[in-house]
Length: 175
Image (cartoon, rainbow, N blue to C red):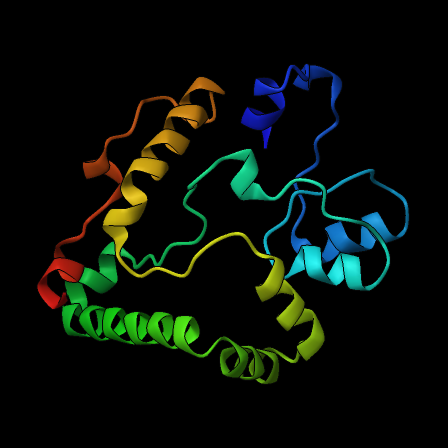
């Protein structure tokens, strides 16, 4: 979000940005304690359906083709249980294919498993401007761009490379 603000001429030193998880952020916005939020879906749909706010700029417009969510496993799991890592990748790929082919059914499953309102989940899927992917190669460029911005903002002390951030060897073995 800071990159987008800076790119649009906003002096971020004059903006009070507070890090919050989605639940507290929705509550703070609903209570009028904050003026705006930058949250992942389904939060924008929840806010809109509850009449507490309106989405004005989707994240894909703020940063086209940005990486959103990634499947990450620990080095310990890779070392101690590589077969499980391969199985997790297969399951993730199958789930990605399923949601792309059956979004309504996937919404029902998600709502039931997470105890979320089905209308909010469906609204989220309809208004989200991202795409469901399972190939990590599609996220490398965007992730490196994001890491570069983190470096420029001094959140990290060194520029990160693809090798620092990605190990696609398991994915490449399966697919």
